[in-house]
Amino acid sequence: MTTRQPRPKTGGHTLDPSASPRALYGAELRHHRERKGLSQAELARRLFITTSHLANLESGRRRIHIELAREVDRILETGDFFVRNIDFGREPSSPASVVPMGTLEPQAVVIRDWDAQFLPGLLQTRPYAQALTDTHNVPKTSPNGREQHGATRVRTTPLHPGATTPSYHVILSESAIRRPVGTAKVMADQLQLLLLLASGGRIDIRVLPLGAEPQSALASALRIMTLQDGTILAHLQSHQAVTRSSDPAVLATAWITRDFLHTAALPPDPSLTLIATARNEYAKAAQAKTRQAPTATEAR
Image 1 (tube, rainbow, N blue to C red):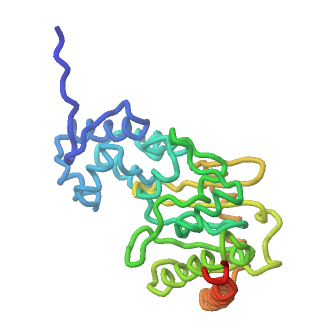
Image 2 (spheres, rainbow, N blue to C red):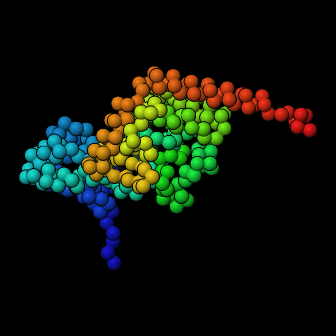
């Protein structure tokens, strides 16, 4: 009977070359380093990176950049092996295109959001998210974890005041701010949360005024996420299709759209003024509704 040998470890991380092309690339890096007789600390010093950075490269937890691959080839005397196979070293460590968005959010260091119709899920209060699901036919994530069409539109784990990660940059459409979702009180509380988050420097909020929406992005949602391992992922959503990819062509389209929206949006201070004005209008409407409601005695 053959005894299964434990997988080797690097920097405390188990090496599994079969996990992904990037993991295989990292395993090759470890193999050639050891063949050269270098420790992780020695190679890291010669590459001018930290030992933990090198350990993450060898375990496939981090992507390698072309300049670093050239230095690895030079120091380990591997010809152009690591440069020639750079695409494997830059492959996502997991199939991010099929992983639920809520699973990826905790791995993000930067998130950039846009939604032409509603407030993005990370900013939603629970009452807003419930009203969105109940009255606007925006589906939740299905029980088996597969995402539906409104993947970025329904509240998952919201941002909290005082937290430091991820860095969050959002462009809101004024129409989403003006569009009632739920009661006036729900909207007033929702916009108050936006002001609270922005006041602490938690997020960068810009509003695209009415009439300024580019037609190409009018009926769409867009998210660009930078993950901890360096992967950049674009999620583009329209009435026709949902696309999520780290493909350079898809990313280029996402960045062009994002830059166009950012240029057309109001600066931060006028954006917050617009949100505060809308919040006050909703609050007044909620108060008026409360005053108009009959008391129990009057109802009898």
